[in-house]
Image (cartoon, rainbow, N blue to C red; front, side):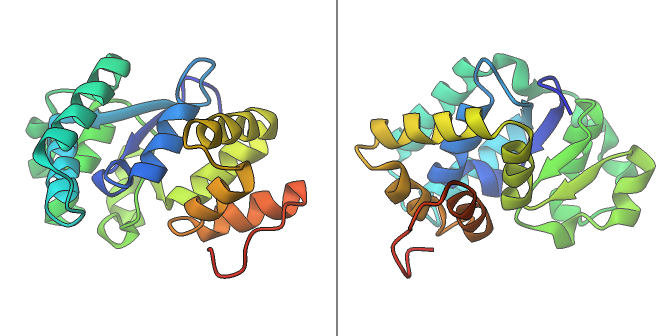
Length: 191
């Protein structure tokens, strides 16, 4: 795996601020992977932010503008022409089509049931949970992942341990893995 390894981030990953922040920070120079998405994925993330998560419209709009500005190379276009040949769950065919059109080998999603292996195999695409991919990135370059976690923690005015505990609400396996690897004690019940 290299820094140009293309990964489609599903809307469920992008809509979660803590996860999105970590994933996109790990995609900044020097990046550990190259993020990919489509306009439809960003639309879905925004709908989740304003609908389910209660973000104000302006905040969701500002988030999208910042994401598109910071990662213009991540946008995949033309995926619509592949929807009819994708066989995964109908609601997430656009995500697989984005991976195929963007030459991505991996989809990071919390919704693996919408991406059965038999639907992905013809395209040489895999799907995994966010924590699993973050643990993979940690195993590839633990120093950079820790430095980025500490950078985010400083911006959020938290200790690295507190920020990892916060992330543990969304990705408990990652929090447990990193805490054990570096010997951090995380508050009980935080993840």
